Length: 115
Length: 112
Image 1 (cartoon, rainbow over the protein chains, first blue to last red):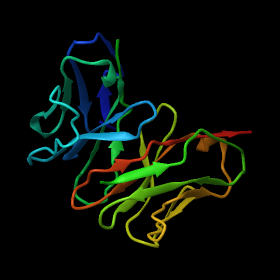
Image 2: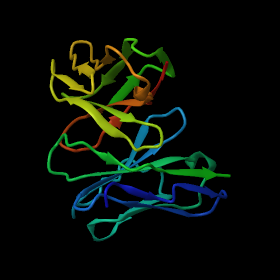
Image 3: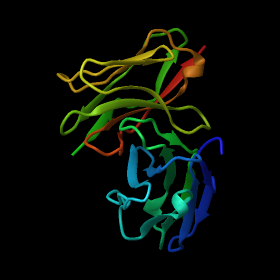
Image 4: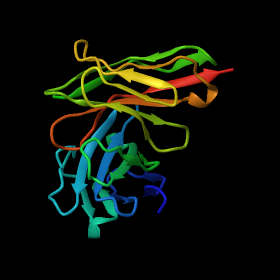
């Protein structure tokens, strides 16, 4: 596609429910990132996929968070047993991964609200 | 660990005013530094970058100089326009990975 696509754009859920957030990166981009933006906070790194390498999961805040990237393209971020503190905008970004300081292309994010 | 500190917003300016958004950082090694911008309703996009000390990044009239001695990367523009209204994020990258560490963002509002 023309850009990084995320769905849904908004998600309201009840505390304790599981949610799945989807990211479609730009076609051909091998690197994919998930960030979280909470009110008053910076963008918090969550997880990074690069090609077929093992993902860098160092930013995942708890074992309730997991992410997959199937076929080197679409990624799904899953949050189990959601808590109110999980409310945030979840951003996905991608790039071709060919250069060290290559710019990231961001999606518009998923606004998650946990009631 | 790595961290980025930005001035708090919102910053409200009149059109054609001079803009400075402060950014300082803490990092191990020699980071690369970035400014990303998020226009209303859009995703973040790279505005400019500098990869070594004393480099100046520039784009769309914005500039930022990598100051190693003050660990700073302040964003400046000589004459802002209403269309510059957005949230600006300072970021850094260190080491061999591509993971970026971002600041909290500074909202800029430019009024006529």
